[in-house]
Amino acid sequence: MKAKDKQHKTESNSLGERSDASLRGDADSAEDELELATVRHRPEALDKLEAQSKFSRKELQVLYRSFKNECPSGIVNEDNFKEIYAQFFPQGDASTYAHFLFNAFDTDHNGSLSFEDFVMGLSVLLRGTINEKLYWAFNLYDINKDGYITKEEMLDIMRSIYDMMGKYTHPAVQDEAPLEHVEKFFQKMDKNKDGVVTIDEFMDTCKTDDSIMQSMHLFEHII
Image (cartoon, rainbow, N blue to C red; front, side, top):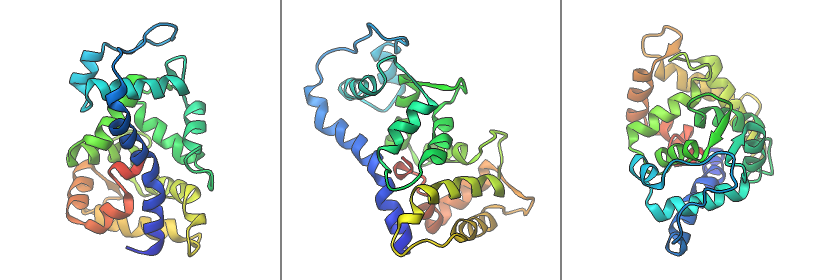
């Protein structure tokens, strides 16, 4: 892996690693049930979330405390999400990538994230199977949600990552680097050369090409 990719991976690991570490370190002290009063959006019952996600009851309690500290109303809008996400990448401009990430978490496309949205997205990224993580990543790159990834969509995502990370790597990343990466990835993925990447093409290519998996950071490193 090139030096700039190593830097990108190290930096982009931070939020995922902190999330997983907080679950491990704080779960034992979380004995009380979810606090449901004084919030605008009341989360689903703890038992239901435990059954639907890959987190334990204690882990969900820890996650809820952190979520409520940042969002007392129980709902995160896009501006709130960008502010929270920017704290982990103060050296770059994370706003565009945070926009795309928000849309990937907002599975019902109502313009806000509930605790359930947050939990289910994090469950896939931290504990999901390879297929689940790849489906989630495809949804991130499929910006207009039409079931296909175009070269323009992939370039928009890649540029947003470089805005957040690339300009501050050592050695410095050249302006043409996002386009070079996209040309390389898209050529491999678009197997029938029809100008779009389907979910099957995406899955097949990613599973058989380690360099693409590493460079695109499709798993927990995506947050």
